[in-house]
Image (cartoon, rainbow, N blue to C red):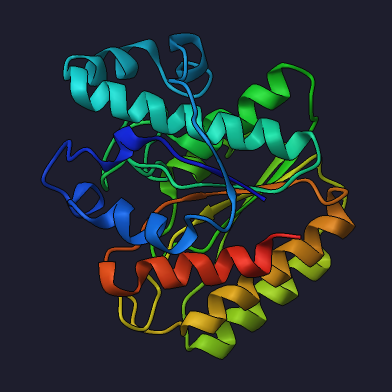
Length: 251
């Protein structure tokens, strides 16, 4: 397991909950010394326009700090995907998040769709021919769903609500039916946590989610898998929830 992180992600770039001071530190404090960390580079303009219009990218570019952070976050997802394609699982401790960013839209603390960019880049380079994207964030990733809504080669699945056991069962039942993808990409949101906005999942539930995804990846994508951070806003438990997921998701 490789952890993708850059010190710049600690910078506060807006006033939204995803950009709050201490959020990255809460996660890194739990992971430091346990895994190898790698630094990403900013995604290139042509990477961003794989899934976004040029006008959208140019609008974000008008704020240089946000553009830098969002491009670096997309670059983190790309590095995660490249590592996964080489056969090692990876997790991106990145921000801003991405799953609400669409072809020409940005909202919900998102600017560029990190997972979509990473998947599309692998596909364009001939590294994979298909992908399954699983999103267990509290909120539906409308940006990801819309970007790939006409694609026959990319399946987007968002974990439905309900109590903690029904959520875990729903994920397990969905994964059991899936087969034959080039890679499994995960939008990992931790705002379903019992002490976070969603108020349902226990810390150990995130480990089970990781285990279910790891097991499924070995059946449907030869074990090739990566995950990147989306939501999760209670700093007192965020690091523990992320660490729990990675424990289940890594080999």
